Length: 400
Image (cartoon, rainbow, N blue to C red; front, side, top):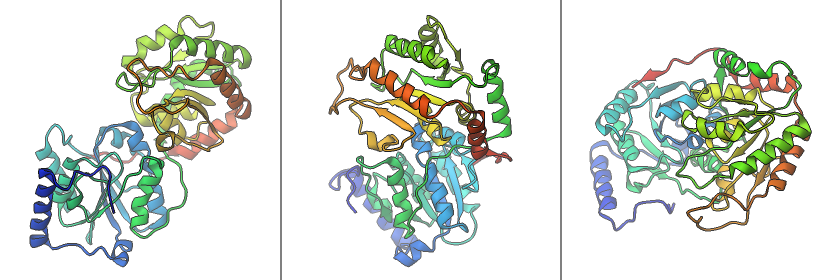
């Protein structure tokens, strides 16, 4: 299958990978990749070392779909810090093991993966990589783990037995589900899921204590900041105008979310507001805690960021300000009635000063009011979201 992201066949790297693959065949042999053999694989080791939050969240539907298609399968994930946090309570995997950062020490990561491979249940092993984890260093880890069928997304095509073709015009979720299709199973449609424990649920309730005086007020999660490296900003004065209007019309209480490094910018934006709400910037120090906070809100107004993906993963409706330069189908919940995706006319390359100014204040106000009218504040709905994502027991976090 052609792979548009692969290392070019004429390059020195590609030739080196071919030589490694030939050496492996001479020593280990080549696993059978017949449809019947692939369909019968039940022992999976996923390598998820990359850090973007959206990458980790968009892999979660695959684990649920795999569990539904193969309830008897054993699934282990060798995870980087972000993926480990996302998968902390995921009931569709058996083990989530913290992996040393390959970028910091490839040797330590190789030794850890080999040790983890030896701890897997008996039988044929499938080592898999999802979208966003196609880097050659992960192909190295997959190769050196042990004899296995390697499947998924990679730049190092010769090292994989079943290499998938990433297509940016399709949702990340669908690209990941192609892995299950390649194994001969048709996945059931499923959404991203992030889970949390009673401990995070209680901690989230404490963070939201200032909002408890009137449970009928709209709790509007707001994300106004994103990575400086990503041209996805929207002007602060526009956010202020929207929030003033929406709060006046609906009595909404803004709940600002972000990292500690974004706290000052968030404070500068919210302090002039007549209803400044509360800021939890830097206070949601794990993805499960962030998920528990979002599950207890009524809606979200957000830039296209990782926090939005977590909100989707707990079923929170929202309004999304998306950049015109990024294909919306890849990351965003298009055609989902819970979300209003606001995006301008597509452009190939954003200018250096790009700040999504093609999205008007009036458009955002209308979409937010419409969303809040459809999904009005409800303690019952909040509790239903909490129960859907809450796990009673804490999975032990292992270190490889």
